[in-house]
Image (cartoon, rainbow, N blue to C red; front, side):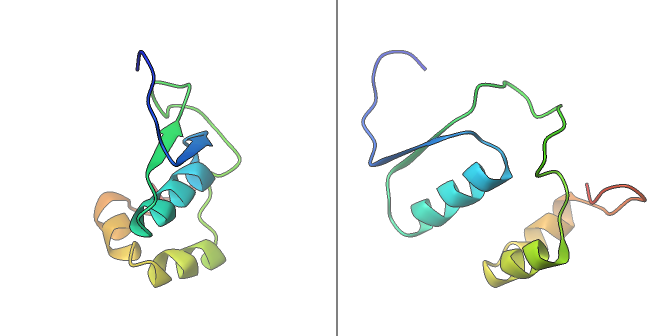
Amino acid sequence: MTGSERTACCIAGGGPAGMMLGMLLARAGVDVLVLEKHADFLRDFRGDTIHPSTLQVMHELGLVDELSRTCRPTANSWC
């Protein structure tokens, strides 16, 4: 991105928390911009595990079906 852009909310970091916050704010009608310094997600981070409480929240938000279509549980991770 070059130049300048106006937004109501700018979120620094496109990890699990930043992306979830961005999605929730966008659903609520807030103009959101999520900034992420990495070009890919081929890295380890603290939010790489989906705990049962997280799955419950994702279910309440209507995201579990999409997660199930794109990810499959393995011995060490969900995707």
